[in-house]
Structures are given as C-alpha cells and as structure tokens.
Length: 225
Image (cartoon, rainbow, N blue to C red):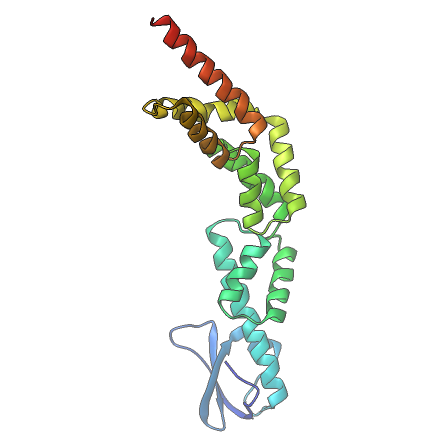
C-alpha cells in the first residue's frame, strides 16, 4: 500500500502472480507497492506517469476503503450483522474512522445493512428457537448495537403476536421438577424465579406461574396423605 511519502515515475505495472486482483507498481525501476486493479483504472495509473505524494495519499485512502469494504462483506457473508457490529469489526482491524463511515454508507446503499429488519428477524428467531422472553431478547438486541427504539418496536411487535405466559410456562414445566430436591419451598421458588428472569420474563409473568406451581405441589402432597 502506498503512503504519503511515496513518489516517483511509474516504470512498470504488473499483475501479481498469486492475486490477479492486484497490481504491482514499480517506481523508478523498483517495486514500490501493490494496489487493487480497480484503483489503477480509477486513478489512471500508467507507465510514464508521475506519482506525487498527493496522489499517493489518495491511493492509500482508496486502498484502505477497498480492503475495509471487503472485510465488511466477508463478515456479513457469515450471517446478518448490525451496523454497530460491522463498525466494531472494522475498528478491530484499525480502519480509520472516515473510511469506516464511507464503508457503512456504501453497505446501506447495497442494502447489506438494515438494523430494523435485523431486529425483527432476530427477535422472531430467538423466540422460535429458545422461547426467550421480551426482556432477554431486547437486551440481546441492544448488546448487538441495535438502537433501543428499534429493539423496542421489534419486541413489542413479536409479543403482540405470541403468548408470553405460555412461553414462560414452557420453561417452568421443564425446570420445576429438577428443583424437587430443594427441601426449602422458599429457596425452590427463588431458584425458579431467577431461572425465568434469566430467560427474559418479567415479575408480572413469573409470579402467577410460581403461585400455581406451589398450589399444585401442595394439592399433590395433600392427596398423598
């Protein structure tokens, strides 16, 4: 990659053997740097032309942009990401902030980024696969950098369509028997409460479930006497 101090007369342009997307640039008879072939065309690089420090700076920034965009596309190819996740990834690669802004803008133009669609898809997928409650799904979305307003809208839409109490019961019915070895009823209730809270349910949803579980347990004990 060229830097601001690079200058000289271009004496040779040659496609690289192991990466034909890149071109080796020779200045004054010596190899100077490699660059993406699209930038050779964009900047009209040709043998005999003079590369000034100003032009070298333009090439450096454009090369950073090309590399950063490819990094982002590779990152997005694995699975959908939020804007913030892409920003974090590029930041970890030490991409300059202005280049990150340009890459993010381009990804929106290409429709590779859409935090609103991401939030809705993520919320539905997490509920379908894990039956998590609204608190956990909202928290996971914000941890991934989704704006709180978008996260709230996605979660509200989801739980207007599904039964949050039924989802909480799904977890409770699996967990409650596993806590049968707890001799202290109060501790058993506390453990069940914390378990459902970790899965994203509110106290208003949890408490009636615990009350019913305890009542059923009491009725079962009485029937055995």
